[in-house]
Amino acid sequence: MAVINIDPEKKLQVTRRGFLDIAVDPDIDLFKEIKRLKKEKNAVLLAHYYQDADIQDVADFIGDSLGLAQEAARTKADIIVFAGVHFMAETAKILNPDKKVLLPDLNAGCSLADSAPAPLFRVFKEKYPEHIVISYINCSAEIKALSDIICTSSNAQKIIESLPANQKIIFAPDKNLGAYLIKKTGRDMVLWNGACMVHEIFSQQKIMNLRARHPNAKFIAHPECEEPVLRMADFIGSTTALLKFTQKDPAKEFIVGTESGILHQMELASPDKVFIPAPPETNCACNDCPHMKLNTLEKLYLCMEYEIPEILMEEHLLNAARKPIDRMLEISRLYGL
Image (cartoon, rainbow, N blue to C red):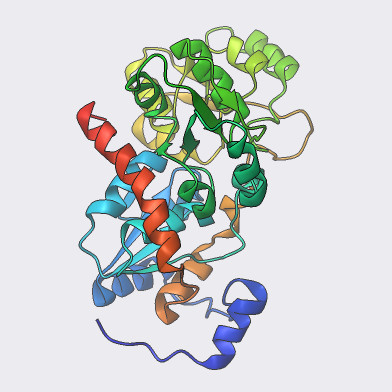
C-alpha cells in the first residue's frame, strides 16, 4: 500500500476540528470519485443503516453493529473506511490493528457510549467482584477492555443465555436494552444507567395518535427504546431484525421506532410499503442521530483522498478490548448469528 505524505496543516486541521474542512469542487461526481478511490486504494466502505441515504448507496456493506463487526473481521482490504460513529470505527481497528481505519468525522460520537465513562465504570465494576461484564457494543474501547463479553442487540439474548444460569452479570451501558433482556431471559442483571438519546425521545402519546390514524400499520421498535414504548410494539428487534420483519410481514404500513436512516433500506427492499418514522416528544427531527449525520459525502471523499482522520489506539488497549469482541464473534458463530 502506498504511503501518503499528509500536509502538516491538514493534520492540524483534523486535530482542531475533527475532520478535513476543505472546499470540494461542486462539479465533482462524488459517487464516481469515491468508487475510484476504493479501487485505487483497496479500500472497503462500511456503513451503518443510520447513515444518510447517499452514503448507504455508495457503501460496500451496510449493516447493524453485529454485521459491521463481522464484516470488519473478515475484510481483505488495506483500508477500512467507516461511515458510522466513533465506537464502530474503534471496533474495526481493534479487529484489524495492522490496517488503516478511517472515520470521516472524529466528532461522530455516541450519546450511549458517552454515558459510560471508563473511570466511573471501573469503580462500579469493582462493587460486584463475582459478576462478569457483558457490554453492549455501543461503548468506548476502554469500556470494552473492562468487559468479559461484548454483545449487540442482534445477539445479546443468545449470549446471556449461553452462560450458566447462576452466573452473575453486569450489563452495560444501556439500561433500556438491559431491562428488555432481563424480561426476555429471566436473568437478574445489574444494569449501568446509560441510554441512547435517539431511542429515549419517542412519544408514547404521539405514537398512539399515529396508530389511530393508521389502524392497519404495525409499530416496530428497537429494544433501546423505553419500556412504555416497547409495550406498544407489534415487533421488537435489532435494526437488521426490523428490516427483515418489514420484508416478510404482510402489513403494508409500518411505524418505525428507531433512527430514521433505516427507512432508506426498508423502502428499497419493499417499495410497495409505507414506512412512517415514529414521532419524538418535540417537533424536532430528534429521531435522526446527530452524530451519525455528521458524516457527509464530502467528508467521506476527503478522508479517502487524504487518508485522514485515522483511528489510532495504544497496543495495550487494542489487545484488551479485542478479547471480549472475539468472545462475542465466537458465540455468534456457535448460534449461527
